[in-house]
Length: 244
Image (cartoon, rainbow, N blue to C red; front, side):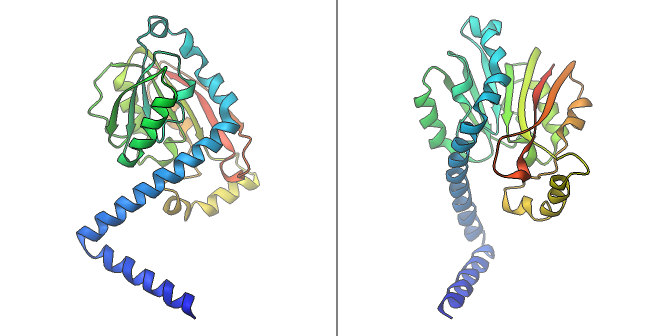
């Protein structure tokens, strides 16, 4: 019975907090802090399993002319805790974009750990509107496990094209919708009714490839594969590049 009272008390406090502007701001701050902490832990686990795939995806950054000159500039969208820093060539200058300012301390930690890359700027902004990043200013754009949670994928792709230099590439690795007719596909359809509310707007039914094909890139290359993860819901993956 005591547990019930504790639950009711918690719900009462939560509802009361949501009724005031100050309370909503406090809850948002707590949510962002908890989310940044949890995601920084998940990113480490994901990297252990997905490192070979990330290395393959980003390997040609090492031979980019700007990398050879020591002035490669990469914009990473939805940078989170900076888990991808370890995969960038030495000397890479990184512009990090994320809507959650609470990732700041985790970014700094990874920037120190992988000191061969330079965190040039942390832009706190939604992925659909990166106005603080200049047109035609970056050699490459990278995002991993991000496009599933953006509100408008075509808008994000448009922003990516805007900031890329001519001939620049967009590198992506995302979990996507499964193959029609499989049990995973059916399971995703059911789970996605509630999943976005539990995972910061993430959908397990993303069909990113459809938007890539119509985004106006000069060349789009991708492959679908099942990631070696223990969660079937997000095993279907898409990775590849899109050239401006």
